[in-house]
Image 1 (cartoon, rainbow, N blue to C red):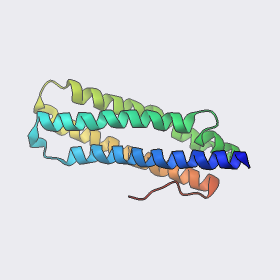
Image 2 (image 1 turned 135 degrees about the vertical axis):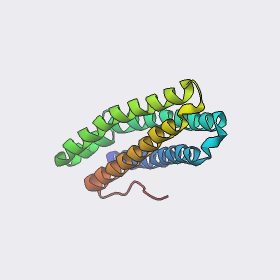
Image 3 (image 1 turned 90 degrees about the vertical axis):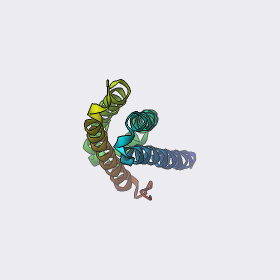
Image 4 (image 1 turned 180 degrees about the vertical axis):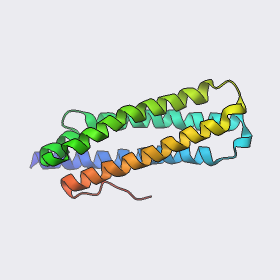
Length: 152
C-alpha cells in the first residue's frame, strides 16, 4: 500500500507542476499579446517570461523523465505506451532547444527591427508546448485513467 500512497503523492506533485508549467506558458503568451510597439520594454517582458518558462520546463523534464518517473511508471503499467513516452522524451529535446533559442534571441537581438519575427517564433513555441502538454495528459490518462489537469 505504501507504493500506492507514494504514487498518489507523486501524481499530486505532477499535477501541481503541470499547473505551474501551464501558468508559465500563459505568462509567455500574455507577454506576447502585449503591444509590440512598446519595443524594448515588450522584449524585456517576453524575455523574463521565457526565462521563467525555461526553468519550469527543466523541472518538467526532471519530473517526467527521472527513473521511476511518470514516463517509466506509465510504460511499466502499460508497455504499449512506450513509443508514446519515447516520443514525449524526444519532444523534450526539441522544445528545450527552442526555448533556449527564444531566450537567447530575446536577450541578444541587436535592435527592435526584428520584433515581429521574435514574436512569431515564440508564438510557435507556445503552440508546440500546448500540444506537448496535451499529449502528456493523454498518456497519463491512458496509463492510469487519471486526469492530471487540463483546467484553465
